[in-house]
Length: 255
Ligand code: DGL
Image 1: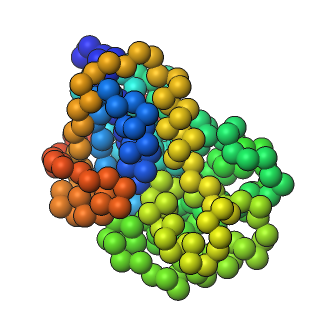
Image 2: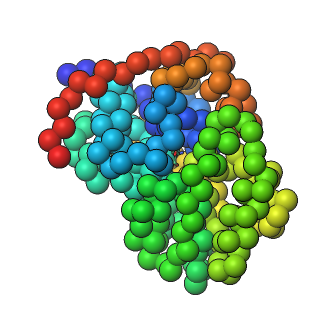
Image 3: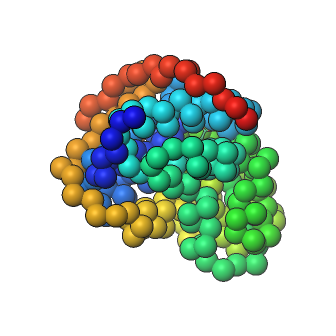
């Protein structure tokens, strides 16, 4: 069994979404040694079944375990909603799931709007963890818009109008890819109606981490084309070097 390196923090997402969390965490904990994995070959996660999401997460987490990560940041709402409960006790490292970690720091409101992936909406996780009446709308096209850097304004405006018709007090961007669309969303609605949970999530993790005193290194891994990731990432983080890996599907799942 690999030895845990208490300075090593892994970040997990299906693609560039987790960078919205990583860039904030890196500022708060610059001495962390980070490994980022974006499972771009299997993106979008929002269209996957619970069983597929469990397998993909286990493949990634086995990799993080081999790398000696002491902390794993689930910077993916979809796996936090669908997989976290099934694997939370399986690994030697501490896991931070985004939805569960930020639910209590949201402003107290009467009605919350949530834009999220289809799998997250189907799980009902946001309303369960916040305890607030929520209107949840799936935006399955948005992840690919971000990853492919081609924005469909009509689609975004129409989802937003659908949401605003319910008069939510605030709208949570319940997928880590969606903050990339803020420049577009704020064309059609005031910026202060949106909640990007990444800042609160990064603060929660930074406050909870033990003593971290590594060298501030960062390594990025993806499962599909490296350059596509670097380009899509640009708005949130200038990724210098990224390696493409193919993770073995080597563990028999028991449930
Ligand atoms: N960024 C992830 C999330 O927060 C996954 C999006 C996807 O691949 O569908 O849910």
